[in-house]
Amino acid sequence: MAQMNTFDLVQVIFWGLAGAISFYFSIGNARVWTSISIGFFLIFISQAYGINPWSNYQKLTAYHYIVGTIAIMTITHGFLEYYVFCRTFEISGNKLIVYLSTVVVLALSAGFLLLNPVPSPNTIRNIRMVENAIWVFLCLMNIELVRKIYAAIKDSEISRGFIAFGVVFVCILLWRGSELYLQIFQWDKDWQDIIALMTDESTDIAEFSGRVQFSQEVSRYAGLLSGISVGGTFTYLYRLLK
Image 1 (cartoon, rainbow, N blue to C red):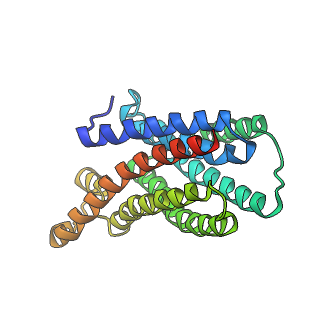
Image 2 (cartoon, rainbow, N blue to C red):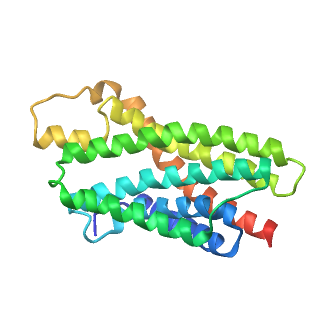
């Protein structure tokens, strides 16, 4: 198992609970919720690298980050489906197709990594940076989708659940956005490890220690609040739809 501090372990545990709740929710509710629920479940898979006993294998670490990208794309697809549904009351496909499609995409991603060389630490960092950039962009898109869905169904009781989803995406935006900010300016831990072991480059992290520490704290607490808010939102929705 990778070395983790207590705070990060608690964050993974909360994401585990949120993932379990969202997956259970997808089984017991209408098809329109399936992609959204599976996407949030995949976030736990992407975050679980810290408790994975084989996390030192570089391809597996890269795979966790790729799963994170698939997660937000699946979530966004789900909210697009829901937006179309609330305007037309039509939804295509069935749950089994969604489950199988997700498994196929995950398998193809694993195959891509297996067929290519072992990624270097810098490559893994680049994959993680791309993941965070996609998360930031799609979180902004999902906030707008949630707003539009709420406007379309604001007279129904379930509309309050989409207010909760808005809170979820704000938390995730702060979490992923602060990580991306650190990566863009090469203040993230991965880059510091790379230059310490593999390059002769210097870093200006000491000159901006205040904003670096602030961004790190935002990332930690927003990540924790994201997991808690996801679990709470699906629990609330389950009670509304029960």
